Image (cartoon, rainbow, N blue to C red; front, side, top):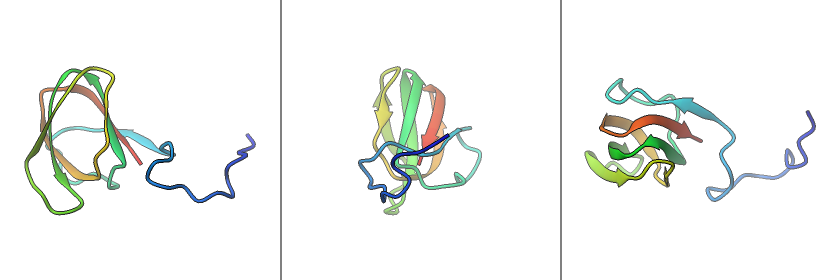
Length: 84
């Protein structure tokens, strides 16, 4: 498929190019996120690229948390998807 934007550099405010399901507490993510999609409402606890640990977000279903995360350490929210 042709990609009309392949020659453009993506910024942090650009749509994600990759996505992967997240299993909370499973260790480091394969890539630092640009955001985390939340399928089912609840809490999402992350460690950030900046070094903060145990940061808790309260998210509604369908939300995208705009965070550069390295780990999702715990979650009561469901169907989490890493976006990068």
